[in-house]
Image 1 (cartoon, protein in one colour):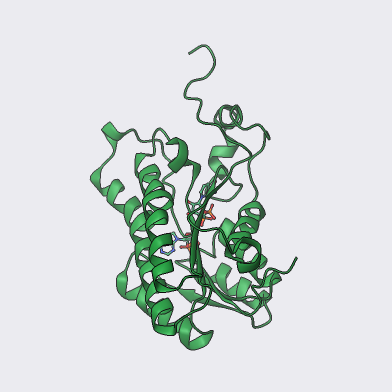
Image 2 (cartoon, rainbow, N blue to C red; image 1 turned 135 degrees about the vertical axis):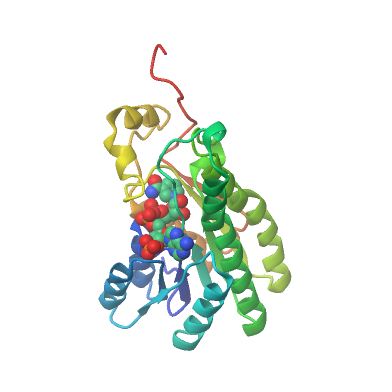
Length: 264
Ligand SMILES: NC(=O)c1ccc[n+]([C@@H]2O[C@H](COP(=O)([O-])OP(=O)(O)OC[C@H]3O[C@@H](n4cnc5c(N)ncnc54)[C@H](OP(=O)(O)O)[C@@H]3O)[C@@H](O)[C@H]2O)c1
């Protein structure tokens, strides 16, 4: 089935990372024009852009900085055209387990800056473009996490930021986008564990992995391609044109968290 994404200008933030690079390939397969955003990993982003035979271009920005987000969208508009689809995928997951009674305000502020404020800045500039260019069928996909759905002990900063984007921000922006243009849509994907560098250490720890799998009926972690396919589906006006404000939980059926090893 045709996705209708050919020649659409798609910005994938965090495209230099594990899930983001898979998203770039998935949108290129739909013949989209892809803005491959990166923070520090220039080589990875440039390599992806080179693979695309001119349909993708790499753009750098620290998304926590207002001026850099403005520059990013300006550069994309000049080089590829106005952004019609955004995948707000850039994020960090501080790997260490830190309960709230030990968490510093510095850690909290840093995680919220990257996982929540950067999405605000990205979406604000995307909406300004929708209004200024009178875009038709614009769409955004916010990448949350099962941490937003079930919480995640030791990661209150991450869980709070991801819940912020995939609940309150999602429900608000799906209403605001339709006030700008009736066909505009905003949806979210909340992945469970996905095999990328972000989850590598966790997945290598047999005990943590076994505990996580206890609530996953499919008994596996996801691959970046699973999340990329969901992003393409939700961006496509043909495949999901009547879906907005929806959260796809892409987790192999995760039902919750097991806190303790058996018998503890
Ligand atoms: N992997 C999982 O198990 C999992 C599960 C649930 C949700 N997620 C979510 O999925 C998304 C992608 O995760 P991933 O596994 O692909 O992670 P990843 O491989 O670590 O990639 C993270 C990406 O975010 C970018 N980034 C981080 N901070 C940034 C900043 N301040 N400004 C600009 N870019 C920044 C990184 O850019 P540079 O590296 O170029 O600096 C990188 O491209 C994240 O939002 C994550 O929370 C992942």
